Amino acid sequence: MSDENRKNTELHEIDLEAAAGGATQNRYDPQRCGKYTRMEYECVGLFEMCWCDHFRRVDLLPGRLVSYFNYICTMGCYDYRGDRFGEPA
Image (cartoon, rainbow, N blue to C red; front, side, top):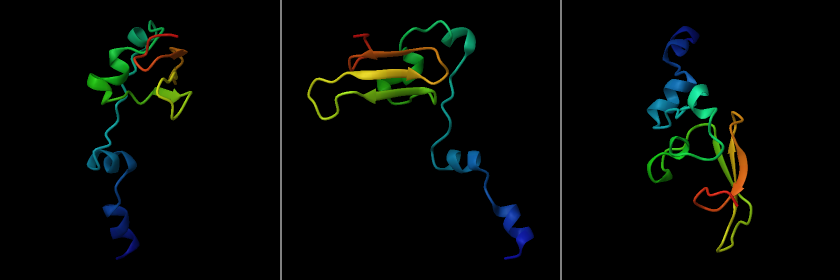
């Protein structure tokens, strides 16, 4: 295959993610999200199955029955510790 044909058949990263089912979940809205002080429904979606790209949850006590997490919005809206339901500890 020539270099010219190869360039025409390459997928861009965004197209590749969408084709693989990894479409972005960027739901950040500065007017709405800027008011949040903790995790909200928009951050994780229904049954926590569709996380916003900017949401992070870090297990502080991995492998334990009762655990606490650090909830982080990478856009700077919140950064706090809470239980598994997102309630501040």
